[in-house]
Image 1: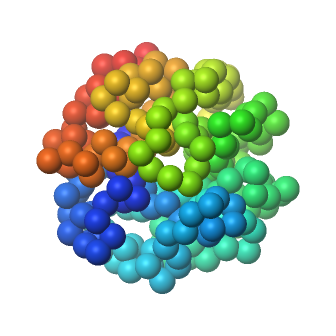
Image 2: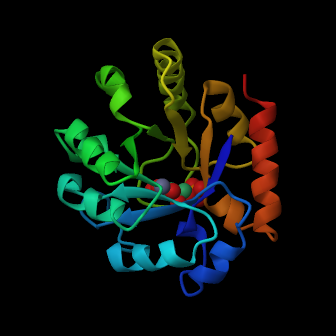
Amino acid sequence: MRINPSILAADFANLEAELGRISNADLAHIDVMDNHFVPNLTIGLPVVERLQQVSPVPLDLHLMIDDPARWAPLYAETGAYSVTFHAEATDDPVAVARSLRERGARAGIAVKPGTAVEPYLELLPEFDMVLVMTVEPGFGGQSFMPETMPKLGVLAQAVRASGIDVWLQVDGGINDDTIAIAAEAGADTFVAGSSVFGAESASAQVDRLRSLAARHTH
Ligand code: DX5
Ligand code: ZN
């Protein structure tokens, strides 16, 4: 069970201090948005490079950007532990994934709520993680979409059947209530923005979410 707080809900004027609040997390989830793939803009390479230097935990980059074939390798070169790009943004996800692994990063592929996972099942050995978006990407603080859960069941079964080690991540609207639903559906890696950074003690909330997820896994 991994808990990856999203700094989208953190204080952007104090990111080093905010990362210090989640030093007990598994990874820090960094949302990169380009105002093209999603209608919002966050941070890019120079800021990610600097976060990499000051973060107490490895970085889990979520690229909500067009043209990942061009940009994702550069993010991997920052030393990020994991780089996830969107399936909808490329017609050659395998080439992008291989470029990430060649640079020493774990390769993740993300799907929006309306994107089916079946076309990607046979490609699973090329990836280290699948991110099932549980909200429309672009903004924090949205409500969890339970209709995305069947995709986790399909993925969990395919991962089990092939015996490979692929993490299954959920992102969007994860809180004390919804984490149980996602864990029961088969997720093992949980992104939480507002629920962690909005808590008085972010680190206590990380521990709380981790134990809730563990209690509902099977
Ligand atoms: C949404 C981002 C999420 C977001 C989650 O596009 O990918 O990582 O920060 O925020 P919460 O947990 O507030 O839904
Ligand atoms: Zn994200």
